[in-house]
Image 1: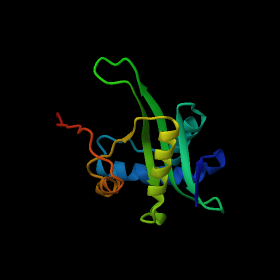
Image 2: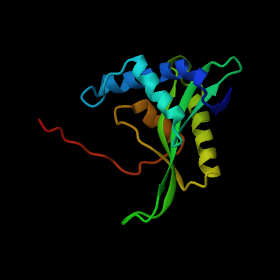
Image 3: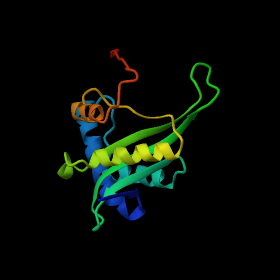
Length: 157
């Protein structure tokens, strides 16, 4: 298995993984997440692939079967009133196809993101994770990510 940047011909397989991610979020927080069909997800992915700000990397085998994806962007903070100047690799999404989970694929994607962050001279890697996603929280802890902040909510009816 190797990690490489996504190509347009990967779109169908990436869309399947994105749909799995969306289904989990929609199931757990339907009041927050919109339902999207495959076409909508594909269109979003095409925008990302055509963007200069975001990049999709994939874990793929020699037969071009995609096992997992990671979408990231580099964010820079400069001259902020409160925050130190910094450069951050922000992980927008990471997902492994349900069929291939628990095989180290997510770890390999995150290791590659760390390598990219080092090459880009980033100060840190950041992401967010919904509190309902216990498997993801455990996964990130296993990679030695720590909680930077919590976002609290109270529903107003």
